[in-house]
Length: 430
Ligand SMILES: [Zn+2]
Image (cartoon, rainbow, N blue to C red; front, top):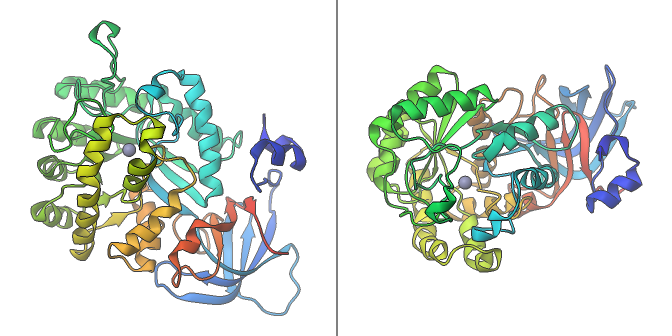
């Protein structure tokens, strides 16, 4: 079903959300949005009573509203407008409600179709760009391309294809017995296999690299503290990726694996749960971004059993969840680069913004938490025209009622979402 070609009533029925899309824009479509407040996320300045002029999919100007009558004016009312949000760690492909052995049953096409729904839910929550770190069968590439073609609604995507990992490691699938001969597509041991898999990922459309440096919470039979790839293997991944123009994200919970990944030159460390003072010092020195998913732990511990997580995963989460939040606090006070990333897909998509209040609770100002999901995210994704509202940038924006610098939880309830000049959510009072 093509959302852009069905009637509004059909689409509302289909989506189950107060969500709609305008028809595709023709050349030189001009829109004006008026808002009580526009947040400059770089400076923290709250601009009052502004008009944003949008031509096609880009912002042309942001200026104080005057009394002149404007054509195509949509008054958003008493809201704060911010740049569209960026989640640097999501898993759009698959069903978030089927974990552990429960996720073995779905086919790749079925998981891809879950991805279509998940992309729509993510966009409706105000996230107009994401980095998808790990997907089988290049389903993430297909989803990105379908969104870019306008076939289905969703955020702008950076995609990794299959994550690289050692045989039996966190990025392998260890659920089935040997006779099933099951392993994940990104399994690669030693530099030669690593380079082969990286080149295959690039060939089939990946634009970022994800690998597993240590064990993880949700995999069977891995220890979160254990380094999996050797220092030399990590160096091989980073060197080949950077040579090919791809940034590298390393999944790492354990102290030594984090240090090895930073020294190998990765662009981001995901989770970073058990990072020590040396890891924090190195991250600052190397300019490594940490993407710490400090909301998801509460979801796993509260809803994890019903969702099907393995008992060993729940035990591991109890071990690393609290430690990760203290690590976040220490990394933040040391001035390390922190980008917003939530591991959506472990919890149901669309709740991404619930992480903001955790980031504030563990040391960030409201503005810093918003910057992590805008300017810092845009830098890490190496995506132009997103993360700030400025002339020339994409008309990707979200509006919340109230002032998020006063109450960060207002970020959880967007009333208006636009991406590339098209409206994807509108719950305005008028
Ligand atoms: Zn993840």
